[in-house]
Length: 330
Image 1 (tube, one colour):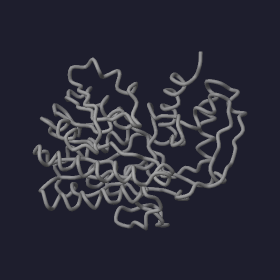
Image 2 (cartoon, rainbow, N blue to C red):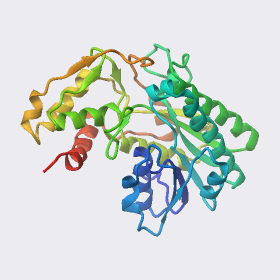
Image 3 (cartoon, rainbow, N blue to C red):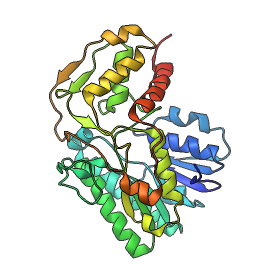
C-alpha cells in the first residue's frame, strides 16, 4: 500500500489493546517512532512485550482521563491514532458513568492535548453502534438512528466534539466507525470479550459456545488488517474533502452468528477434527444489541481509496491460525 505512515512520530492511545497493538506492530515496521499511552485497564502488557526492546517504541503508562498524561504522551508527535476507549455495550449498561468518563472526557483530553502540541491530524476510533435503532441496510454514514446504549451515546458524542473542534481549532479529525473488528491479540477472556475469540476459545476446549438469540443476528465482521489500512489512509490523505468526517470501516458483507460458528468449526476442524461435533447453545438476546449490521463502504472507497484486502473467511483463517498457536494446549 502506497498510502502508509512512514518516518513519523505517532501516538497510539490504547496501544496495549487489540487494535492498538496491531497498529503499533505495523507502524514500527514502517520506520516510525511510536508512543503507546495505556493504563492497562483493558489492554494487556503481553500485547506490547515484543516492542519494549525496540528503540523506536516508547510506553507512557497513563490514563486518558488525566490531561497531564495526555500532554506527556503527545510531546514531539506528528500524529495521533486514538484507539483508547471502554468498549462493550453490556459494560456500558452496567457502568455508564465510567464509560462516559473514559470515552467522552478522555476523548476531549486527547484532542486538546494534540491541539496544544500543534498536532493537526487525529484519527479516532468511532463505532458502528452510532447507527442505533436505524433499520436501514446497508448503513450509510449520514443516516443514523437513536443510540441504544450508553456506549453508543459516547461514541456519537465523540463525533460531535470532533466536528466542533475541527471548526473551532483548525484541526483535521477523521472518525472511523469500526464494524466488529477481529484478529490476532483479541482477548477471549472476561465478561465483555468479543464474540469471535470467545467462540474460538470455547471450541478449542470442546466446550459449547453460547449464542445470544437464535443465531440469525448478523454483523459485518472486519479483519484487523482492513482496519490498519483505513487508519493509515485517514492519517496520510492530502484530500481535504476526506478529513473532518467519519467513515464506515468494514468489509461490506453480512454474516449471521450461525454462519460464523459454521466457519469457525470448519477452519478449526483442520487442526482438531473433534471440534466439528461440538454443539452450540442458544441463550437470550442481549439488551441493547442491534439485530443486523451491514456497512456501505462506498464513502471510504471514494474519498480515502479504501480497499479491504481480507474477506471474513480469509480473515478468520488467519485469526484462527494465531488463536490455535496461542490458545491450544500441546
